[in-house]
Length: 312
Ligand code: NAD
Ligand code: UDP
Image (cartoon, rainbow, N blue to C red):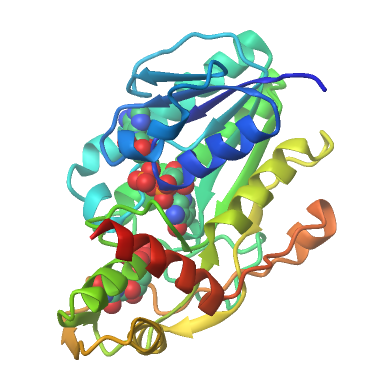
């Protein structure tokens, strides 16, 4: 077995910490870089005694140098509440973070994977969304710091590949949930579970008829690792998500049922530009990576509810 040196930016976040676990389990040496904007020490505290794990407090908007074989670039707040808190910083994180990490990858000849997003499709006019769809994004809306930041990052990745022959991999991640989401993360699955467990009102934005397709975090990590290991000519972008689509109302009802909560559902205003529907077309991931999700919503929710029950 060869022990690879792997840099994970955003490694103390929800997804990043699961990825660090997986990479260490496979016998790699992991450098976890994070500025702790939305990440938490708690997510990686169990790894701190591992001599093959290193935690580095750093902001990806500043250059960073290390020797590594592979880089997973996850640093970026992902919840609308957090990425809108400082829109300029979010855009800098995506764009300058990509430039700094691509520059590093070029210099040290590392392979680099970008955690892009289904948000590049915006409020989609094509359903489900294949990778060939260019998207429908408002460039000056409240979500644009995130959507356009991630779109620019994709552009940078593709051009570093074309011009500088950097080995790149781009995945477009669809809504992912699971243990280690922050209770105040603000995304729908954690909000609903935390509200249900406390018997507080469940806040549906709008009428709850908008849809999302929810992926359990273990499936995403499997997709990331497979994408990084995929043969070189394949750069993506490739969708990584669970195609099972639910309305937000259905999600709320499922969470109430699984928690046995006495919460009532209330409606709050729908935020501007909130996408009406979202479902990945995963034919490309199946073909190129032999990947498909294996954890269905109920099973994943049960595990996530158990995590939050312990936490709160
Ligand atoms: P998260 O907020 O839990 O994790 C993001 C991590 O990046 C945090 O640890 C945060 O502290 C760190 N970070 C933010 N800005 C940084 C900066 N400037 N420098 C260094 N570190 C910084 O979110 P997550 O759900 O784990 O998302 C991880 C990645 O996956 C993000 O890039 C996100 O855009 C992408 N993604 C996630 C989802 C999802 O549903 N979870 C969907 C699409 C894309
Ligand atoms: N949402 C909701 N109540 C909440 C949080 C979110 O109804 O407490 C809705 C939100 O308006 C959106 C969907 O759930 O339509 C998914 O929101 P999230 O922030 O999780 O992800 P994204 O909109 O980025 O897909």
